[in-house]
Image 1: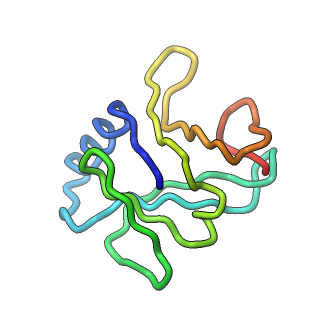
Image 2: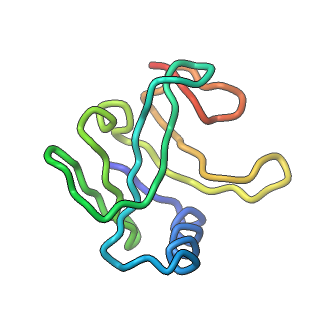
Length: 108
């Protein structure tokens, strides 16, 4: 399962409203090769389900993950920080054995 913190939920809802997206859109979380640690996190909005997609709902936020990415993201909490030391979405991933300093890439 992928969970969402209260701060992330608020930010996602704000982004959906600002973008005037249809309620059928979900947050798509995925993993791609790249970044300084080998794998990078990716977030986008999507309104299509693909074969083998996994869908989770937490705090009213629907999150979709493809099966390959889910192998890396299972148990992850999506958070949002707006502090002075960095602003943006953060992944608290229990599967990551190492993360880069910026938090945008990881390795297992």
